[in-house]
Length: 349
Image 1: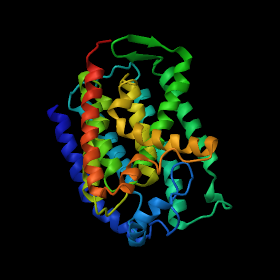
Image 2: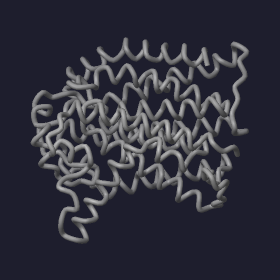
Image 3: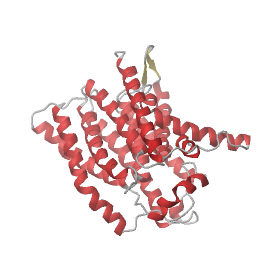
Image 4: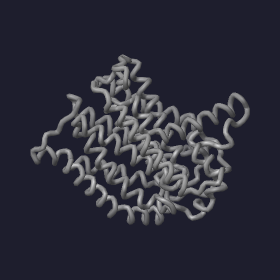
């Protein structure tokens, strides 16, 4: 544990050194959202969001902080994993094919990040849907599913994961049905984090708290690959949050939200804690559930189920200040994380 704590601090320091020049570069390149009606993850206009956040759009806060984290974590991991072996420290994993485990993690990290980067570039430069850079929502959603199915197949075929560990009940074999289940989990969390990323520090703070839970679980099963990856991710994310809390100097962007959400799901699947994952990331589940209920209600009933969705926007509508929402959501996330970790460790496989 002392090694990983040291690496966490190292990742924090490296990201802290890089982030200010990175923010200045984004300003210089004008990588800022153009003034336009904001849409949610399902492509629907959100006028109430625009009412509360027009000032932020006018300030031109740069979007794309997730890109720095992806690059920093990936480079540090590529150096640290071989270095650990050279130092004589045994690299252990619950999977016999360690390289396949690494491949799954970073394929998710990069592929969903690239899809999110495309979306950010569209917002930066204001491309219209008639042009190439204005790919319609349904095609982006389709690409998410294609990527998720590829990842789920790798989990099933190369790592041999085909079951669920259900607390209090035992192991539930799914066979090939694990592939659609895992794909759904990945797509759901990718969009859930994206939807949650609506207030300064909200998604990043909830993600950080949730990752601490997964970090603890990875350490209990002695999986060096997962522990190292989460360690570096947490360290880099802490440095980012310093500049992302209210008033934010940088936003995560879709490049971060889609990548981090999908990778968060994959880490949970690799840990074999699929059932505990929605509890550990319970805030994300609440955010996407309220959005989905709202969307389906509008589509099939012709009216809104909630005054506004997702949940954090409803709290704003009720008069809660942004900082109050974020801080209390962090507390709720901490409780959910502890409960989810407890669920995950009360039974042995």
